[in-house]
Length: 246
Image (cartoon, rainbow, N blue to C red; front, side, top):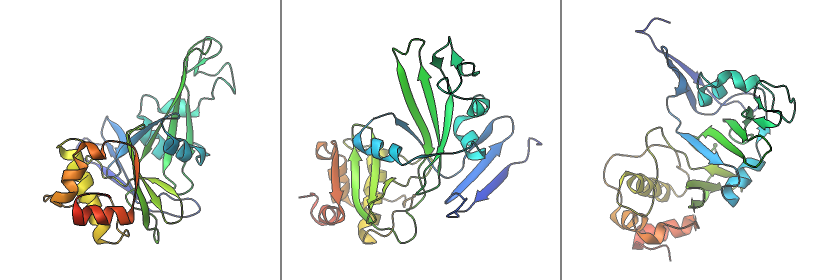
């Protein structure tokens, strides 16, 4: 592909085979990546919420979006079997070690997940690290029931009124945070403000660049926010009005 050109592949959601709110881009000599969705890394058993999300993942064959997750150097390993399936796999190390990649999709959002398996010879260290993308929005008709601050996994989750758990929608380059006065808490405060003003219906990634509600931001940037907790929509509304979740 000539250096002066870029190509965008816009993929839309289909319940049977598509991906939801996703854009894939390729830059010359670099490889594919996400143009909109923020990348996420979820450690094995990082928290009860992470474990819940991991349990619902469905194995699948590798495709272009999995390649986008791992990059061109590791892309060939997406097709290599795990040492548990084939001790002679190119990903096997010393007979029972492994550095394979396994591919999944989230059956609720249809977003791709690539899991990196690291096992030392003899298995004294064995970990799984899962790479995926945050959704851009909740599915049509889904309304926020709870916003979850997960300090154990260092993640932010949304529980929909269907009961499904989602990574909090996030745009590339716009991360969330709590307990300090930086950009992450600003972005989270703006998201909470948007959620409250839409009565839980608008949880789409991306927020205005202006200052958030000061009451919300003061709480989000304080120590009170810096712990694992589940905040109902009613608590978020209370926070918006009073500066406290109680």
